[in-house]
Amino acid sequence: MDTVEAHSTRTGRGKWVAGITLIVTAIAGLAVWAMLSPGALAYYKTPSQIAAMSPSGDTSSKVLRIGGRVTELDRTGRTVYLTISDGKEQVRVEYAGEVPDTLKQGTDAIVEGDTWTTAGVFAADRVQAKCSSKFVPKDRPGDLGQT
Image (cartoon, rainbow, N blue to C red; front, side):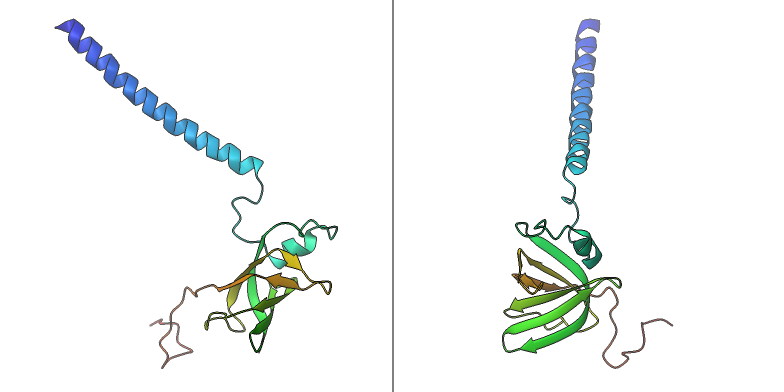
């Protein structure tokens, strides 16, 4: 009887050790991947980060996501021109296509693309308006729902 109980205890303990080893290895692998691939975890770059990149073509072949506050917005037909700022730097963006109705001056947006025009304008392939975390009823636009 003692031999059977000892064997099942060792087998159960071995499964736990193998499971925990697998979990720790997976976490360590993710940590190493995150450290070795800078920018892999960043969803978007700010205009200040874009301005700090070397103008020698560091941004030319990569798909970039640029996020910030829309400071200027001009809709001309199906082409939209906007300026995204982080309060320090700004990036001028051109986009041909439909944009969300929630994209307005003063809202946050993320643009994605891989092309810069000769005039230094970012030609976006995709534009997203970030949703506000504060919802206010239409009849009380100045009220933030505080009592």
